[in-house]
Image (cartoon, rainbow, N blue to C red; front, side, top):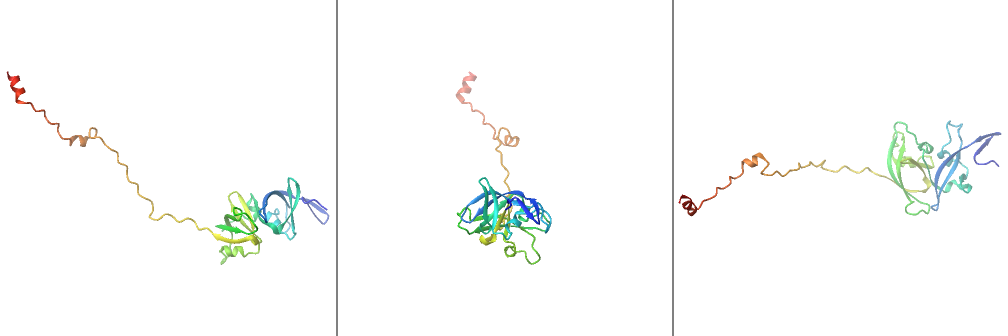
Length: 214
C-alpha cells in the first residue's frame, strides 16, 4: 500500500503536492488539514485542483492532520475552503458574471454554520444566466468567493439559495447643504455700524445752566 502523498500508475510513482484546506463535515465538525493533489493532470494539463479531488469517484479523501492521516468520506463533506480561487475552478476570464448569494445548509449544523454567503462567479451560456442553471449543472460542488477565500459547497447539502440584491440608492438625490451663517457684531460690520442709531445728547437742566451763568 502506497502512502497518500504518492501516486502510482503503470509502475511510475509521482509525488503529490500538499494543499492546506478547511473542511466542514456533516454534524458540524470542522477540520483543518492538508490534502494531496497531483502536480499535473494528463486529461487537461495543469495541476489537480481541490474541485477535481472532491469529485473523484473514490469514497474516502485522505487528509493529513497533526495526529496523522485521516480518511474522510467525500459524501460527508459539506464545504471545503481554500485561499486560491483556481482550486475551485474559478478563474478571471472575461465575461464572468458575479452574483451575491445566501445559502442555507443541511447536515445537522449549528445555526451559525448553516448559512453561508459569497459571490457566485460563472460563465453562463446564452439562455443560462440564472443561478438556478448553475445549481442544476453537472458539478457536485458550487464555488463561492469570500474575500481572500473560495468556498466549495456540496450541492447535496444546499437547502435554499437566494440572490442578494444590491441596496437601493436613497431617493431624492443629495440634500443641498445650507450655508452656515456667521453672526456679525454691529460694532465690526461697516453697514451695521452706519445704520446704528445716533447716541442721544445729554440734557442739561435749567438749574445747572443758571448756576453756570452766575
